[in-house]
Length: 347
Image 1 (cartoon, rainbow, N blue to C red):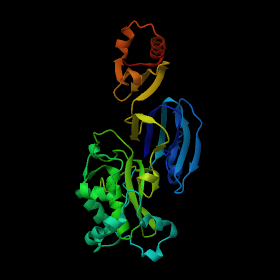
Image 2: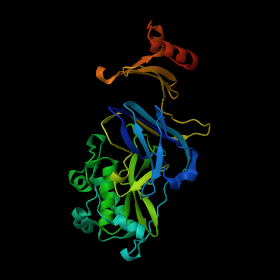
Image 3: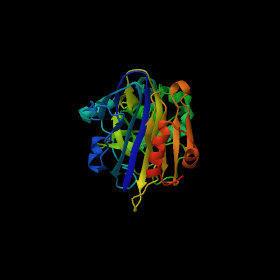
Image 4: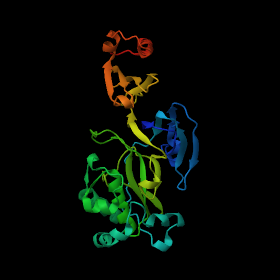
């Protein structure tokens, strides 16, 4: 199976803003990458790359004042099979664990093992190994209600346990903390997870959060949010918790101006349920921007005007027919008419 993945993320910056972003597919899946996941920036800025202490690929850049757009669009090979289950996988005694797994037994920023340890042993002390982890996932899946309106960037595992609401990262934080409390190494993961083999989620796609545990001499994927073995999960990064794998760390005033993520199975004819493509065709000196949006799935194309911040930053979509009927004389009209006349095939 081939899977198309990518993102289109924009920031508005009031001044030059240094950034560290973590958006490349994890090196453990490098052999599966068919079309490389090279990040593109608009406007162009120099990029520097390094691996963090967990081996995750990180990119350094300095965003200029104004809007910067980060994008990639790539193809990844996948087995197309659900993630394997190993119900007889054993739990190791602490003294037999490898050195690099020990870190993932400890508490961390969002995972308070000291607070949750009594509850963990009370609820899950009677089982071990794979059965223990599955029992933890079953509990978290039923105990916590999912909803994007529940999202809060500083919610911890202890707070999720008590508030009983959250998003995928909160499910993962609570489940992996309960695993650590019962002496199973567990690490937080983030990456792509589309609706392959399951009913489509009506919500806008986002990066997903799950966790891995160390059992029987290897790491295994678990997902307390969905509580199912899924198809097409693609790892970007792992760490102690979400603080280690933030998709971006910014060091200056900025505003998230746009965010899209896609994960689509490529069909036998090479097509996907692709997200609309966006091309900037004119940007004025005052910060206004005009884009051509081409939605191949719905066979339509239209013009999007993004007003500058001082004008409210609103967006207005106009059909190509309506735009062409206008008699504007500004440079944006000339640029748009030229591009539309040569590239757009739907109105």
